[in-house]
Image (cartoon, rainbow, N blue to C red; front, side, top):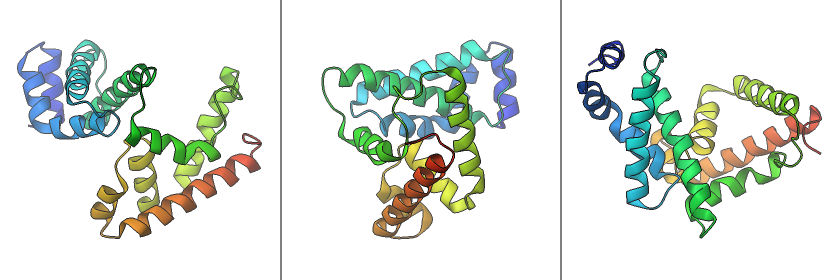
Length: 185
């Protein structure tokens, strides 16, 4: 079923919309949440909450592409759940992803105003736009969707070591870009 047909089902408030969304994009949504959360029940709850979020936002939203929209909702929910869980314990996979970016992004305490946050967002957007398609793919999949390096290697046809080196170079490039723009000291 096409995204536009699924969106039409949401607009009609048909419960079939959620079934079709799950059939078409359920694996991607689950993988997005599972890359951040280690507990299967937390993942299932985030997926269900993401579907509820889509249900509540369509209409008025008409997202395109639908998969990015639902995965973004699932990711945000998973990050919130991860923060709640890490108040009690650590999640090794997502902690590793955050540690990798720690040296090339300013801390939340340094970005105190909304204007500075918008400047940082714009700088990262410019950085991503300047990357090759494959580098942008690797960066977004690793640092937005928290995909494992081994999975990225399989998707790009390279070795995990090669992907790790490319990600390291991309982080260094981001750090230098943000330093040059005065957003990172």
